[in-house]
Image (cartoon, rainbow, N blue to C red; front, side):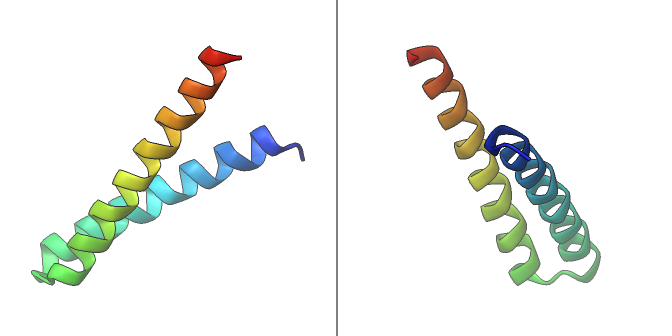
Length: 58
């Protein structure tokens, strides 16, 4: 697999795990899961913006 496919797979897995963490956190009321889910979504959006920015500059 090339790097672009690996990055896309990683981004999708990150998003799915983050959504699962947020759902579990909302159901149980546990702030740790909510924070982890929020950080995962934040990291995924930063990754997506970084890839788009790099793609536009090249």
